[in-house]
Image 1: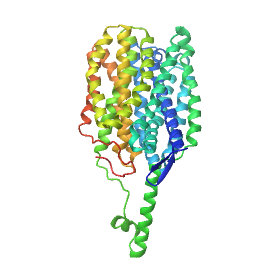
Image 2: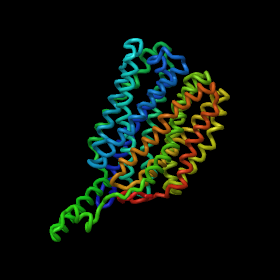
Image 3: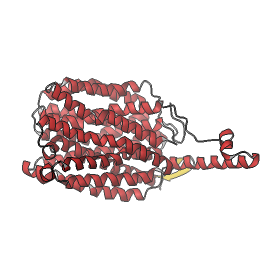
Image 4: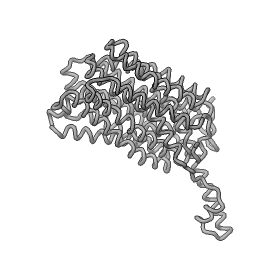
Length: 461
């Protein structure tokens, strides 16, 4: 027997919820596979393929700059598609964004290197990265909004965390592919091997696109739209009986769904995002390159650690979501960001040992517990901070601006500090402590939102 989920006056079946969860999982898996493939290639491959004339450390820095360019496009995409999602619905936007990301990623796999077409190679790479970022700017937020708005309030933390399983699946798949690719001879890896996962990603894109075309719209979006229609009808009826202009009557006498935004929720959501995104970029992008360039270790150490950390995330992600339903979003986010704030320095000290086990352990704990744990709780928390009318736009902008300020810039800043301080580890640890502290402090200003009614039009704070 199929269960029914009631959101306001709108009903959805448990089958609809499952379809939405699978669709969100595939889309976010695609997004994070795209970006993880790119970040690993930027750390290991791209300095030699697209920037061969630079010193190795400088080449790594330039490759990470192209990685950061994608983050610059994400806020623009978040604003553009977020507004579209709030006006015409979540579903249409999610169909467009998955197509943009998939095609851009596939084309990177076919792109000739510097040796073939010269300066045009890195220029086209940057353009594809911009297109990839433009679509990704609303992908994760859209999937998060859609799944949170489908979820029963008492289980929202657990169900919304399934979006994170998508990101985790993408990271796991990308890391697994790179572990296999590193087994290839160096010449084969540099000439054609690195291209295979980029090209193959189009398969996930096509399947996710098919899934999304068959989804039903978010019940919260439909409930909000129905209320707007009812308010407009009430305003028209009042105008007809009183002789007042419709616009004036709507303002004076009829109920309205206009959101009352104070801006606090936006900045709190951005701060929560910084703690997760900054540490994610440091662990999954910069430290992978640092292991090879700064510590002179084999490149398989970092990719294998990401593989294990991502695999463990299939347990830590739903656990963190479930605990946020039990003890509250704020309590869990404070505990996870506080842990990472304390763990950053020991993690870097473990890496200085150059012991493959200790280096891997530092990355595994940071990824599976801190980063994925915060990401899991964030999926419900930030959705509950915003009102229904502008949720998609505000959430997407908060996530992407926070991502630019932390994740987009983190590898660039860290690579610059590494060159400036001659491979010293303490500035890197300091960056991770700072990112964690931003989120930790934000939890003392953010309200507890567990179980909040997502059809409310006002922000939670």
